[in-house]
Image (cartoon, rainbow, N blue to C red; front, side):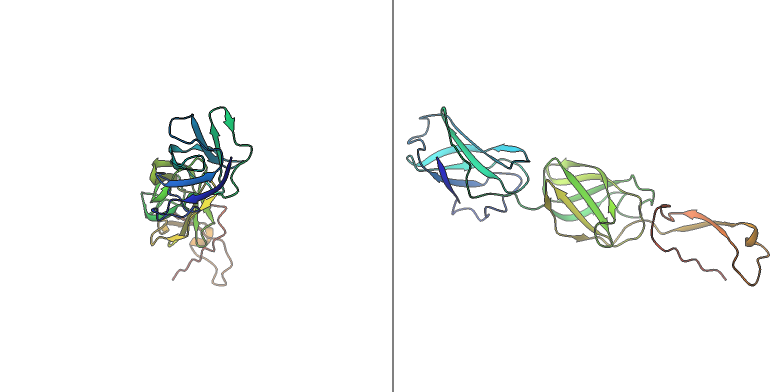
Length: 239
């Protein structure tokens, strides 16, 4: 039945960057469509083989038997093919043209896991931005944007805010990325990060009356020194 999908010319959004909020008018062109509204029940869906299926809304005939418009629903993901059923008749194939929702984008970072964060992790992080909607959410950050992975990420305010828990880590001025249902955001750099290390105690036999030749072990105890698994070099100086 359906052969071509084109975007409504009044919309400024292209087929591969549909807003996660939905509300974009799509023109569907094909054959054997209804000739008038209400002639038969129309069901239009779109999605991918390994993703969620979305149902378009408010489908209306614009050219009898040949063309109709539908409104996208809120959603996420990419490479969605479209399908139509009219009454008891269902299209034998999906559209060749595909649509995708727009990539998520980070605009701000807030919460205790963002500024002076505990190097042990598990502090709340709030990512503010656009197109935050979906089920599979991964947030990574670090000097290159992939060293640390946040946990328990969930949509906190649909399309606007994602909440996560910070990972164990060190450093600051990290690059942040968010991937939602296969759509990866551009990198976003934040000025802040984990708290600076603090020195509480120097102990061990060599902390007093140490050999002038050096080479003895000193135990340094403090806060925010990073995880045991950290690969960061920790320089220490004394005078």
